[in-house]
Amino acid sequence: PGKAENASPVFCVLESVAIAVFTWAWIGFKFEMSPVTLLLSVLNAVALFGYNTSLIKASARGSYAFLNVSLLFGGILVPLLYTTAFLGDTLSWYQYLAIGLMLVSFVLMNYKEIKLKDTPWTYYIFCALLFICNGMYGTLLKVKTDYDVSQKNEMIILTYGIMGVIAFIQLEKKKKKD
Image (tube, rainbow, N blue to C red; front, side):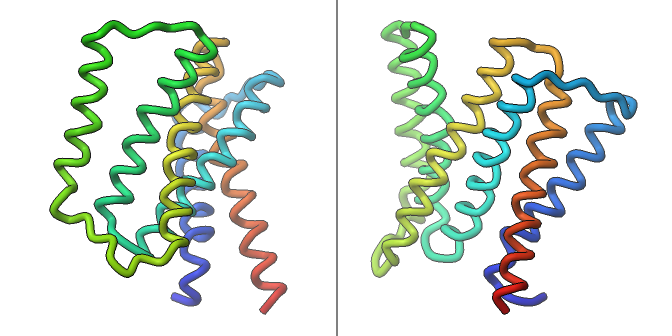
């Protein structure tokens, strides 16, 4: 209950507490952190906060089907661009074909429900942010795995914990404005 604009930060705070505490309990309440884990977690927390905020803001403004296509495309294309541009990975013709078929299938699965008439321009901004944030979240997890597979649970705890702090700060700033 309350103001609709608080839905996203409240969700982020609740999600962060639940996931961070559950993960910390899952690993027996131990915690190790390297500077790389902290840095990647901060970046990933910003991406996750952007993802949650964009998802909620876009879904309140327009077609969930188009939003879903943006989300799925970002989750595939951004990590793909990272691996090809920075890791030098190359794809075979059948991998390109498979990715193309996946992307086409996302559009076809959502096509009938995509309704963009009279959609505010802010909807498209949130869909673009969702594309980028979903892709960055997956990419940063890949960076962490490629760099060092240890401390992956710590990265989850930090990512969600920091995202919750960002959301809490946003809530407090909104309270002070009111």
